[in-house]
Amino acid sequence: MYQFEEKIWFWGLMVIPLLVLVFLLLQWWKHRMQRKFASKTLFKRLSPNTSVFKSVLKVFILSLAFGCLTKALVNPKIGTKLETVKREGVDIVFAIDVSKSMLAEDIAPNRLEKSKQLVTQIINNLASDRIGIIAYAGKAFPQLPITTDYGAAKMFLQSMNTDMLSSQGTAIHEAIELAKDFYDDDQDTNRVLIILSDGEDHGDIATKVAQEAYQEGIRIFTIGIGDVKGGPIPEKRNGIVVNYKKDRNGETVITKMDENTLKSIAKEGHGSYINGRDTGKVVEHIRDILIKLDKTEFEAKQFADYESYF
Image 1: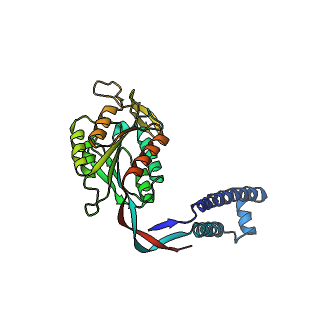
Image 2: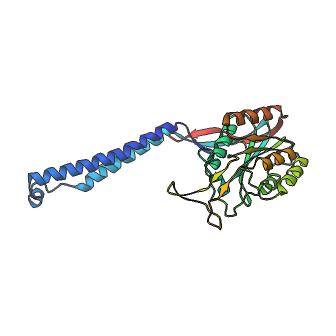
Image 3: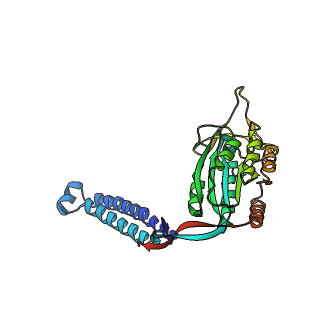
């Protein structure tokens, strides 16, 4: 495990392109002055030892020096000692919808990015709980197993996108089924599943699976992402909208948030439904829920000692 002690010093790397720019401008100015002073042949006779290679080498060495200096100031640290610590908390799994409908921009910046923001803020307010992440569309995929490493969770979270799963759709029941295997059966912890979705599940299996999950000790909370009025699904190229998704008849597809499905799943999972539009209210609601749950002691491994490599 590694970490950077002072990430702000990465800005020091900006000196390198500045050095290269100054060098190129200086070479251009020198070449211009030389042509004014004498012809190319005459100048070679007057200054036979002129070497462009030496100038390039000097810039390279200076850039390397600034690169090494920046690395030293950032101070990369590598974990050298792994120890087991005891914590009290709840096991929380986030199931995040990554279907194409999550690209709709009826909630800023879009549904998927809003989901990431919500999960990040929830994680920031956790203390010693363990978390896991599931990505799902037509199928469910384990993104991050149960862990206490919140930094890793945020990293995996930011890498999620609508292209990570080839199977499209919104099979919420697949995510619930997968979540059943996420928790550690050897430790009797309180188990929470938080589903973030627009609710566009074209089947009624999810409510039945949610009931089965509760019987296995998993409480399910759903967060609705989007607007009930809906919006089109943009198709972008280089960050610019070039079209909107159309159906077989050539009509623009309007995707709407289905609150009823999410409420039904939460009801069967003995949890609650939360509208995801207001980030502050969502985080406060989840925090209140977790406070009321009994905390279970569990063992977790973490790096205790880090060695500096500046």
